[in-house]
Length: 182
Image 1 (cartoon, rainbow, N blue to C red):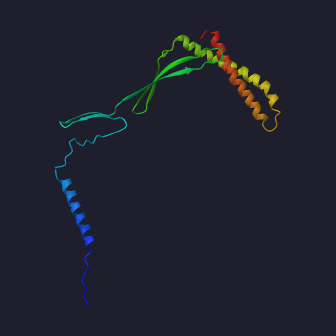
Image 2: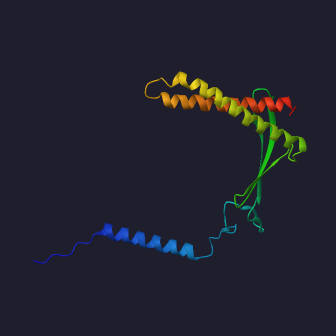
Image 3: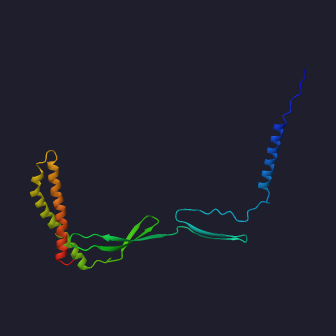
């Protein structure tokens, strides 16, 4: 028996349509009929670059800066908390950063130390030292009251001594500065 091969018209039509669309796509991409009115710009972009592009049908202009900004600056107000017998003050601090992450800070108020400032620092340091000695002696006298606590008595005695030292140091420095009009 002889049979004729069947022609599948659907597959032939699909292949023909896909072939024609592929040829028209290639023709569109290759031909110069479809041209963009603006240029394609490939600018290098990094963390420290800035650019401005103005493009029109007549032409374009580019303003490009690498490493911009070169120096970053930040100004902040710092509340300077003082001790027990002093007033609080505000200090203006200006920090500048470069690309290498190097920081330098400048104080706008009192950036130059006078002889009186240096003398006040010395007086405060000696008052802190004296207060620490007095606080340690008071803390040692108070330590036996808490050393009888089971298991952690030895730790509580040390904490009482150190707490007394720190507080007496602050008070001693404040008293020394106030006494010397600093």
